[in-house]
Image 1 (cartoon, rainbow, N blue to C red):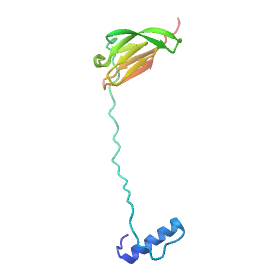
Image 2: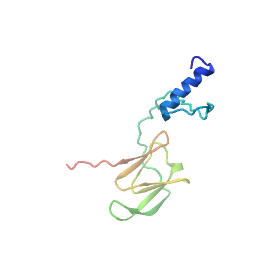
Image 3: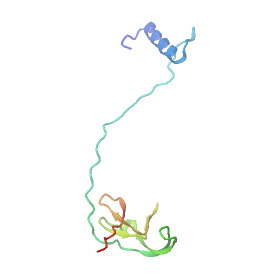
Image 4: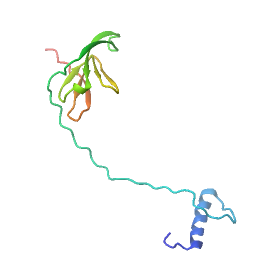
Length: 131
């Protein structure tokens, strides 16, 4: 309130209290019991990363047998160490990209591509049209 006089603050409080609870409590001292602050910062657009540039297939460290949900059987999958999965490299499914915290499974029909910003992008392989 622009006028911090106690009587004015009490009248404003009682008006808001009555609006919320349809009554006031006679003789009850006014007490501030909670505060809320809404803070925000301007939203800054994320910088666009460079388009993926094909640098060829990633080097596999080993091969592992994995279940293939595409055909319900097992397949041999390339194992790629995330640490050595360089920008521009790709891994066609079935593939397993490993790192200490997680494992990325690349199914048949998909390709994992390492982006310049360190993200692994998984895309569906293009099917060539029959001639």
